[in-house]
Image (cartoon, rainbow, N blue to C red; front, side):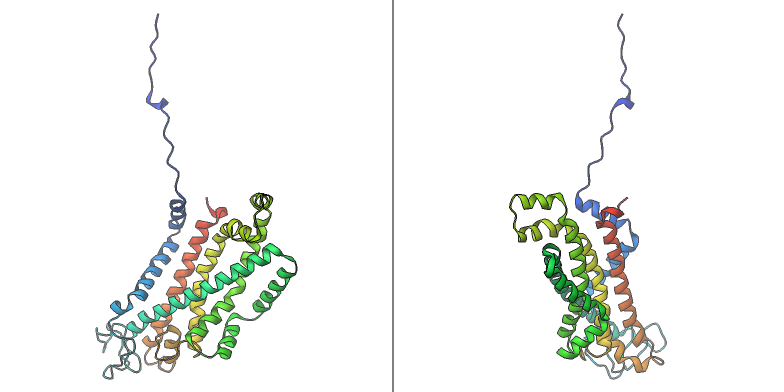
Length: 304
């Protein structure tokens, strides 16, 4: 007597989903933070305006229209759609100056963050790897810098070197340096006890290879997050120095200097102060939101 067996469709094993690539995994965790995605969109728009300011801006940032002094925004009574956000006290288009000012702010942020990041990584790796008297000397200098208010230190540096956009960027990179040094040193000391570092030492890897090939790639995640947040700090410091007259000099369009020039018109021409302040607020908030999303996407402890 023969028995027939029937195969049920439920017995067929289901195929496992394909594993995500590192880039797909990063975007999965980053995009789950809606605020970070919104911040990224805002930053991309600002970067687009900065790169293509010559084509996006309706007017030249330095052209003065004497027949349009302190015009209100176009949607208010007395406004003109040729000057959407109004004009300042000498007839310059505010929208055009804001667009060109984004170019300066983004450029200063890139220069300041890159310089402080490179120097911070170098000093942090040296301090965390060699330890001893080298570590003590570097960290005591860092502690002295952290004991001073960052803006006050930046003002002192610019006052010594002279007010200019280059000296302001240099001052911002110097005051941002301690954060990268401390973060790199802590990450380096944590990685030094790992098995892969010990194995590399056993097979004869030199200090430079250990620091830059073995240890540094595993320390980049927190440094990337800190660099993103450093952009917002650099923009704020640049605006503060410009407001004090120590950054970009007239007639260069810069958000902080635009605020300083408009102080005397606060009560009768609110738009001259409001729009530069809003640009600083929106840009800094966007970088902070994106930095928060990067932290969620790059920190394994925060991944669900």
